[in-house]
Image (tube, rainbow, N blue to C red):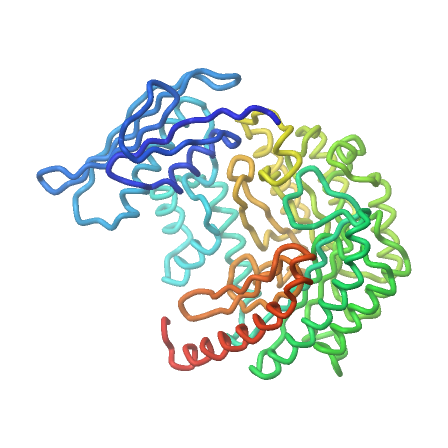
Length: 515
């Protein structure tokens, strides 16, 4: 395992651990931290956060940075102070400390994270709340630049997405829901992957899969009963994972047949008013004409065929077993079979890739003209194989250039940015953005990322969400397939919990609680 640098974060008069750690990680994404709350800093390699009440009632804030020089990182020794009037709510102090820290680290490293001090939030949701209050685009940009230090470019992107989503989300109700199904298996595990998915090549996985499939179908039946009992309206279906097409054609037919019987019975899912139904075909090494035929006949309206990159060398480095040409061949086969809504995923910042290589991949995807192209920033999570072997990556600016290129290229080619989210440990606190040709916006992606709809989730690692006037209730399924199977009685009990929560939320909506 590569040795990681450890820095002490020291707190005096406050315990704003989450925000201070995450702002520091914008500049030093792979660094480890130790935390002290006694206000006593070590001799070196620390960041000190002080908050003191003054006699006049104001609050003095101070950030001191003492970091020794390391590879590709300058020595940083500086101190900044601020004073705010008393009586402000606590997160105002936290935000001011974050701004002081951001300014120091930007000055020392030359790096300017484009989302400012926003960490762990959905930027489009923050924009949408301001639009709902009647603020203009210009007012929103001015406020978020001053408060959150967000760049003009990212604010412009978030505003574009908010306006697209406003068109998509008309006529939604509190009784709407989407269905998610989890197939936590893949043909092989990519080096950057942190999901619960397992390689299907293992003997244990192959033995569990048929049992898993039968349990999932039973959970679907119970979930459909809850939806009917509660008078819910289905808006979209998403079969993801993992890679659902690791299932054989007969297994895929069995699963999609259950979805059709329980949720789409009597519905011709074509034309106006159809339910969006996405199946992640994902990896070309799992796609066959027979499986695509099953998907075509089950009522699915949208599929993903995901290259991640069109560089064979990079594919090999991340653990993929297919070539870039395999992706193109699968895409063309799907087109010949009549698929009219296809998504492709690309990742910016993959190991072994560079700016020019990413741009070639993006150009290749754009030339194929899929209806959706989703561009992800690399996320380095501790549960991934990549985390253990990656070198310190303190400068993420090449990845920012890749994301900027994708935005300019795809908008110029007629694609709308329509959803955006960020993950913890994404390089440089950057974003993942979905682009779509007009009229092909992926509804489920917006519902799940903006947390504005009920989600009924089935399978290992799935999370159901019940929308209340003031927020969400979450119900978690067990994470791994063996847990899911061993404790399946608990899974079914949680569906009854889902029913109870929906009933309670319905009463709150009917009485206007929390509006």
